[in-house]
Image (cartoon, rainbow, N blue to C red; front, side, top):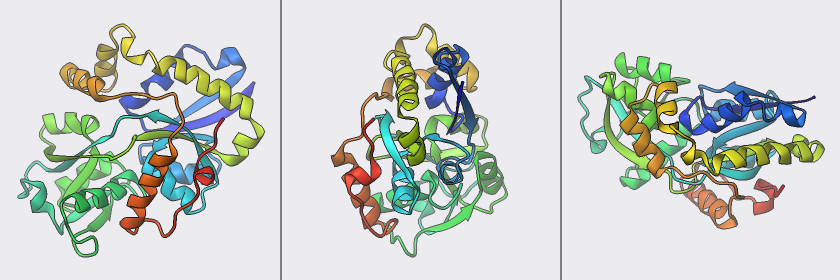
Length: 284
């Protein structure tokens, strides 16, 4: 049986992977797919791909494009979620900040440099016409638990994370939600180490076929909203709102989207150069 390691965030976006694993669909095709949760998000997964700890990552589009440009020898093989990610902007419950304009120049909690929580602070700053050199300051907090500590203990001032993942913390009075910042592109892609693509293309095709067959009908799975609410400790109405705005994909990312992401990252001085489409994307 072929062993394959895959990583992703432990969030509702990835429930389709859990369902296909639980159903033994990969083992039926002689594939031992091993899922690993990455609570630290994109930056942690980029490192895992580089270290060959995982072969595949379900990862934020802008984060993996940056890391490929920075030398990570992997490629995007398809879009996983084509709708934008809604990044909630949060402060501590007892913070003196009450609006997005209040946090200008304050300390952003980020999981890692190069992570989505890091890159999206630049997008938010640009959206609000802030100075990218003087109005952004960072505190590395590793993960969501670290953000809770940082905002509670006042070692950071605000934190950007997927809105529905952090909603329970808003409901219980740990965080206060002060705004949103959607990604201006499809949020999650599937990225694969180049060595794995070269040596295991048929295995990869099988894995993609299985997951795509599930995501194409994901919203129509009976009681999927209740399943998500129970598994991820979410309110049913929040899950239903999230399902209404979330769209999965079974297709490759377009050249126009790759160019859009690179243009934006270059403009924000997050990357120093652009790469050709075929240096970032592999059609399987």
